[in-house]
Image (cartoon, rainbow, N blue to C red):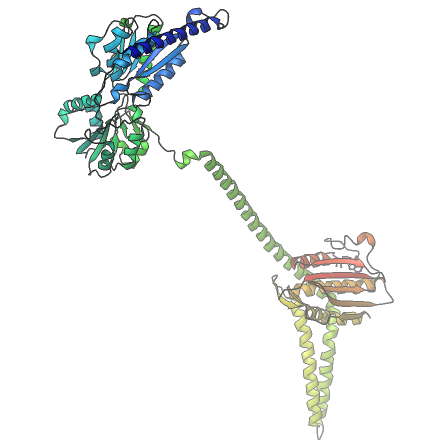
Length: 630
Ligand code: ADP
């Protein structure tokens, strides 16, 4: 070592000593927690964690992270975990380790750590090699190391080994069980001394599978070349991810970027036996479990720190854990779940639509169910209403028919009169014609005129009968396009004689334009007849001096109106609201259903009917019907 090198070492040692003193002073000044806390448990424990390649090298990084976190969680003492990395193992031709040894010995001289934990095989080898020089009395836990890489000769009674056991036959049998057609396994492995060691070991261990599968080794390729090969692999080939710490080109691969890149391009599935590589890139199978190694390591460290003798703490090498598979990879490579060994776990299963949206689906289903129920109920209700409507119309038609017969009864006298007149004329004219024919020179021209009169009178009588028939017809409620003035005129024609008989002036004043409405003419005529007969009854019953019934039609906006006014005594104010009630009558022989039927008929036509008293005296009934849009 040069003079300046020695100076640097001295300065470094001095600085370290000062820092340690400062640390001690600070520790002394710090309040020692709540009174009564066990002082033994407050003692700071210093743990030296030695990494093999670097803090971020998989798989060791995952073990180290887990061990550190568990130690911090479980330790009853405050811990000072100091981490160092054995950089030399990164190089394919390891350089001198002396400076690193020197550095550590300076750092811990006089104040060795309470325990040394080595992670991975290179760190294990380093600790075994240099422990006598660096920490002769410090207990050591050698962990995350394959049993073959621990040299039992170098172990002391201050060492505890937490070893794992690689079972490549099991790992490769897993491939064959999942994909029985596999012919070739391309092994991705780096070129560091550790990786080279494993190539030989795998070859040796897999001898029994010779002839069954061909092994292709990528240890001589740069990672870029490996990626190129992996994207065009032939059928029945799989990739086996061994280790990729340092590739043949000397490039170091930290984290899981390398594996991810391989996964992105590979045209075949990738297998591995390390849990830290599982979850996103590899298919899975029997693997070393991080948690099992972690729990044994933490157990050993806490026991040693608690005063147990390392020599009394032993663990059998840890084999592969229960096989685990990545559901996404199984699907991607079309690997049947039936091929998996019994008891294996399948992870990362994507939830089905039902599992993901269970509540939403349930909610939606119940909403649909309730909605369908409501729709069903409404449809049923609508159907019932339609049936009820049909039935009520039928009843109405029947009732109206009965009512028409009642009205016809009242019309008998007037009809008889209407018929008598033409029949009387016919008789007289026939007798006259007979007499004329018996004469010596009958006037044929006159006889012709008489016959024409007979024909006219006959037609008049037929018309009366036609009208009566039409109003007495028993028809179902049938709506059609009608001209309201004509309908009203027809109805009035039936009661003219009755009015004459009662000495009442019945007038009809239609509006001078056609009023097209949708309606049943027989039923509307019945309503008009009812109103006119009621009006005439009112005049006759009260023996009025002024005896007029005037019927008129008017167009009021989108409605047609029929007004029936009379000069009778009008309706008592207290009865105005009741006249349309069924069986309301003030007449000694009245039934009181005429106006009730009239209102039902008009409402079935989407119209209204109202009663009022005229200021000049007498009653006024108004019917409003919607005019048909053409
Ligand atoms: P009814 O003619 O058998 O009494 P309606 O239902 O046709 O049955 O008439 C009910 C009642 O309305 C009549 O009894 C009468 O009191 C009253 N009424 C109807 N039209 C008139 C009118 N033009 N003037 C006065 N009262 C009337």
